[in-house]
Length: 226
Image 1 (cartoon, rainbow, N blue to C red):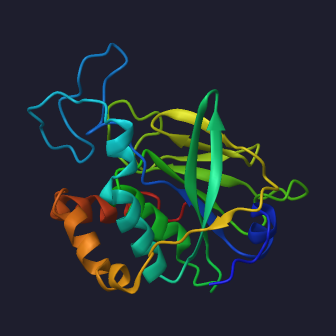
Image 2 (image 1 turned 120 degrees about the vertical axis):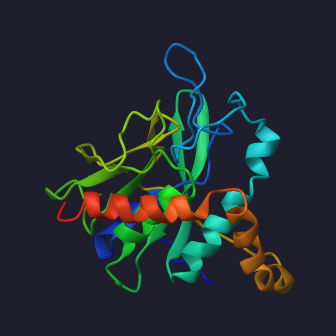
């Protein structure tokens, strides 16, 4: 697909958009503020092993990245890679565009945020990145980790229109006018044919029934919230 050279703000002036990332630094919820290991994972399940920090190689090769991108593409969303930065840390998050105007982006991002173990997702209603409007984007907490600064189902308005929380840290869009790159999910036809397998392989690593239960719970919790 030919990428249209639009800025994030230009995309958002036309469509509802959002930010999500498959990145997660810990093998579960991580540590409490006193560095004591959490005793439950993000789905409330008791864990026996102590949390550990993933290596950069493990993060890079995580099956979450490909599986999440595939699920978004299957829902017919347009995906771009957007840079975020905080101090010396840089990440590429997925900037999701509801180019077909289906009106389900917020719900889909929330459900995928739960499934892919995100601290939060950022939903940007049409016009939210335009500094001349009063429309605000907002973060929605999507897991039950002890150390998540945004509780499960909590909605937090974003006044400055540029922030997202990843792994409990505040990041900002490096340049709101940056022309982002279209995300290439498949490098070959055989990879595309194996898309379903990639998702199923990820699903084997999570308690699917519990995920689906929490997806219903969070949608009911925020019902009527904007």
